[in-house]
Amino acid sequence: MHVGAAAATRAGSAVTFRVDYCQPPNPNPTHLGCYRSELALQRDVQDTLIDWQAGVGSSERWFGFSNRLVSFSFDGSAPGTPSGPAPPTPLNGPSFQLHGGGGRPALKGGHPNINLQVDSTGCADSNRSCPRWTLGVSSKIGGSSNYSNRCSEGYESCWVLGPALQAGKFDGWNDWVLQWRGSPNQNGYLKMWRNGKVVLPMVTNIKTTYDDVVPPYLKFGVYRGGWKGAGRPVNATSTSISYGALRVGDEKSSFAEVSTAQAVKS
Image 1 (tube, helix red, strand yellow):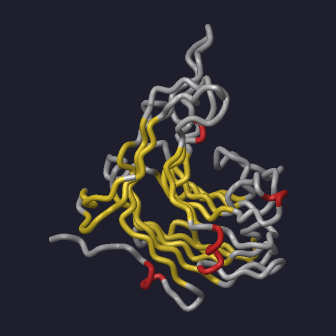
Image 2 (tube, rainbow, N blue to C red):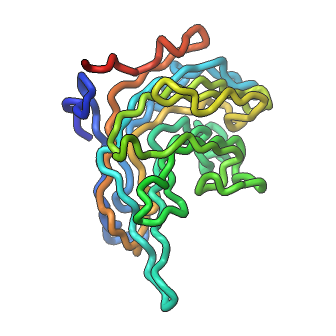
């Protein structure tokens, strides 16, 4: 993790998360390795960010943040076969998460409740316009039997928010705003903006969290799940994402209050 000038047309500072692939260490050759660089709100203070009532959920929250794909690449491929090379492994890794708090032990191994990531499932290495931002939502362990392949993992709900490519490049700044209410029942909702435009219209009557005794906690950074464990061949060995700002608002907040967009330089 490095703090420096935001660069790339953005004023101020930014924090850059970088992960370089490495093999799992001995004496545990099948355990972990280098695959993530993240910050997470400490679990003992997470209820200061999101209010919570077991069985009910939270009141409305607003999240505004800016990010930039500093170095973007497809992951490596599995070994090919006589009939041809294997397809590239997707670059799937979260940029922003609300992760289940795990107050109930049975919920500790599930998907994040909210997961914004770049997904390149099914993209040819040469098709640079294929990778897209997606938002996955999960409220139960085990994914969904109605999984529609819009995302690479079995989230109960998932939406494509647009291409990762901007103006022919991957490294443009994104200013995201998420309006969200956490609920383990059917009265949750969410809406998403990217660079001032609605990329996910308001979705209502949806479960957006696990039925937990503690609230979700905030995580952001870079994560390459395909690098976890041993024996995973890669071509890309480093990934970096920068964050220029993060703002959080409660039920009295608004888009204007949490937006991280900056005035366009003349």
